[in-house]
Image (cartoon, rainbow, N blue to C red; front, side):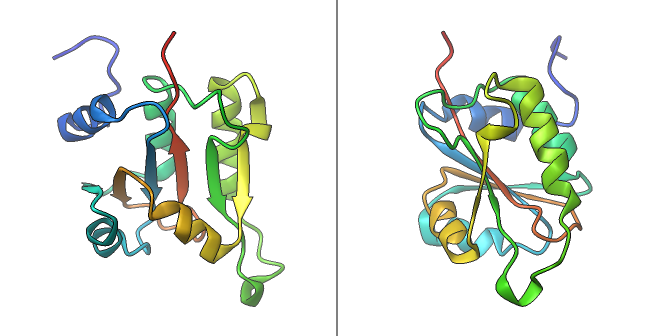
Length: 148
């Protein structure tokens, strides 16, 4: 047991976070995301967090890992596809609230990318975590910052 480590973070995920360096990215993928095949394509570490939703995992990770202060977009979500225009994505509001609690830029630290541009960003992730999140468009990429 360790003090001050969120209990939903597995030892494997803590290890992966420790091994990430400044500028490395981690994707918290929803249950629909093709996490394993994406990780294989980009040679990322693939981890599972079955039964855990992205908001809880995001909150836990941001208690340990700072977002990158040297970019304007340290947190990235997938925008609604043109075929789903008009669909509301309330989980993105939850992400902005969580990020705002941990980053001085507040909600502005979260940017949206068109679906395929998001996939391109995801292909540069060092770690992909497949969660049990069932909300649609619930993927988020975090870029690790420097601990000062």
